[in-house]
Length: 150
Image 1 (cartoon, rainbow, N blue to C red):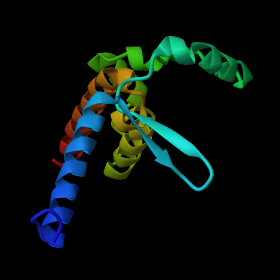
Image 2: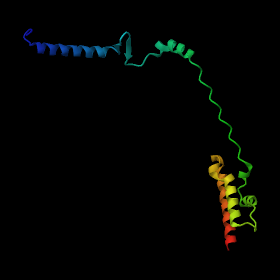
Image 3: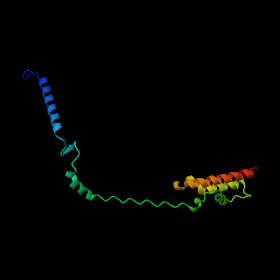
Image 4: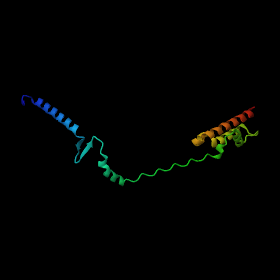
């Protein structure tokens, strides 16, 4: 017993004092020092002062290559002239449906027309016109097939 305390009580009291001292020390210092094998590092708990690192950071940036210039966006392609003809008469002239057409020839005309005009095959900015043309072509071909079937 030391001064009326057992060894265990004196160790517990000393550990409590050390914990209090460490808590006070951490509250006062804005950083901790961590020691490695041969190097010590300072881990700051606050943001670094930009003026403190400004010259070193600028020197570091001088060694980095300049970022590449962004490539200019390509000009959008103009709408093909045939997509501007969306009237029923224009589409009818293109399909050239006559009395000699059969169901097979009309189906072939529909496939050939869709190959050039289907909205899914064209740029988004041209799809409205392509949709109008496909609607007109399907209407005309369906009417022709009904007339042949009579």
